[in-house]
Length: 187
Image (cartoon, rainbow, N blue to C red; front, top):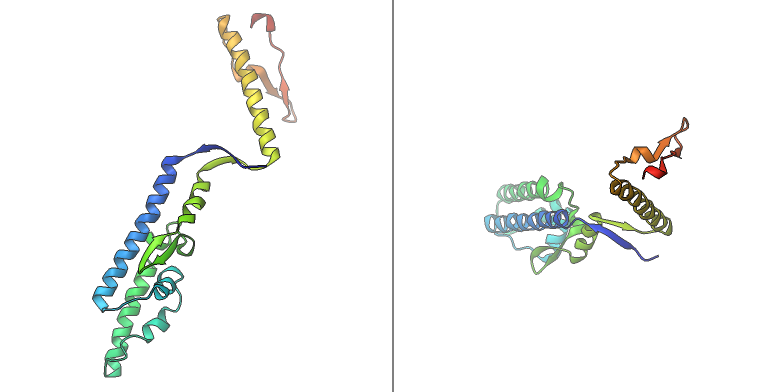
């Protein structure tokens, strides 16, 4: 069965997409500040490993500044970079706000961008859809029941009477729905 979309919450979808775009923009801003402060150039692979998958951070930092002598200063510089990168990858807004960086972000030409396919993943969160034959059958039965109850209400309204949904049905002791007897001639 082909999936049938019943409803889509566009406002919530747009808000979620904007949140992810803002996280990517903030991450890019943090990376630019890091590049400028520590004079580091990152390859796309390094950006991907460090800021999307958050792996090999210490190994990357250990490879920095081989030209700095003595070892104490080099170690101190590497430690500062490690602290700065660790601070970025622990940023709650970017990483812990329902955003899995590996699912949503990618690197293109030195910039963290939002994957296009992630928007489809997000879209499905805000759709109400029918995905099985049973769901379709339940939906059709619900519509039929709604139309029938609505028709009875309309008939009662035409005669000046009022009816409530509880007048049509009641539960028995076992919580099974039972049809009540109405004064049909009054409707």
